[in-house]
Image (cartoon, rainbow, N blue to C red):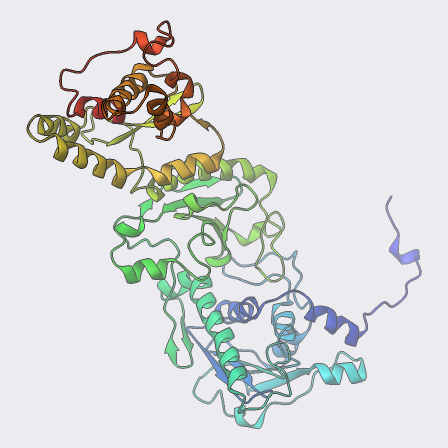
Length: 521
């Protein structure tokens, strides 16, 4: 039904300032996302340099963010201070990192009760205005105050144009009653801001790497943290894939710890939240990182995919479709993109899983390759198991060694089996839950069990044990304890039992090498 607005009565429903401001404060910003939102404005304003400072004064501490961007004149600053100053439906330039016209205000209000913005535009006088939430609460009016802390009145003298954002009354960061000499609070304050520094290093790493902007933290330049370790020689970079909507996807599989160029490089690559947490998609909008290490509901985070990181580049025209929130910290892919992302990610995750289990992994034989795996993975009826590769050159050498020094041969074989047991692969297969593991000795000739069992039985008899004592002994020896039905028929009790039929005599039973080798291999 089409409505004729000119014929309808209206009523003013302007939100109460005091209540609305408190709503803004509850948007869910963290200190990291709040400060990143302020930096977005600086970068969108064409800043070449951004300076972040923190001044400890107990409950009166201050945080400042200064840039040398284009700056604002009087009217532009008032407009920038107005909540909802931009319509999110309006078309943006590709370089614009904002959308809702709320970031400066909501990000600031979430952390402090007093927001002061001081700006200077070329050919204009510097101008400043302040949102004071105590004043808004008192008057219930949407009114700015023309006020700036005295110590900052000359803060823009060293730039021809730029903007200074001042946060004071940091009630969400530190208790206003905190004393300046409170060491514990000072340490906590510093720790919180150190986390911010790491977040900025990650969120804006592409701008820093491409020399678009330099960001200084207490006069020290912030180094970029690139989650993809592109400079590591062993990083596997997958081809870029373009999907619906002008989106590009690029996968990276980071090296195993043992393949990193240095321990320091490995430690740095771990990121803010640790290896397992940093896996997943990294969603960028205009080269600005929105979401770091998230599988977007397509997969679970699992240990054996921790080396997989996938870059997604979005144009800012897809904010609505991807449900980008005000904080620019969440994104949800639309249905038309989910299957494409899932398919691409599965291929990259598969590679990442193989790299993760490198030390204990089972490399499958491929035509034309010379690699010799010691362990081979077998699958039968959707069940898996691992066997020693009998064609491995080392196994052949051990067999030759056994002719002259059987004890050394056995010890060598056992040592290699112990040290190369594919524990990571076993863990991964079990965790996936896709297939079941074969039970021990399933599907093999039972003679390998019965022959060894009979040899050990005979040796017990030679020591003076009775038949029943020898059989009781076998029940205490792994793996024979799993095969009690094979024990009872030994020697004359049931000569129709298959174990008797499979019996064979070893030419050199005295050293038992062949029997042990058969059992192990």
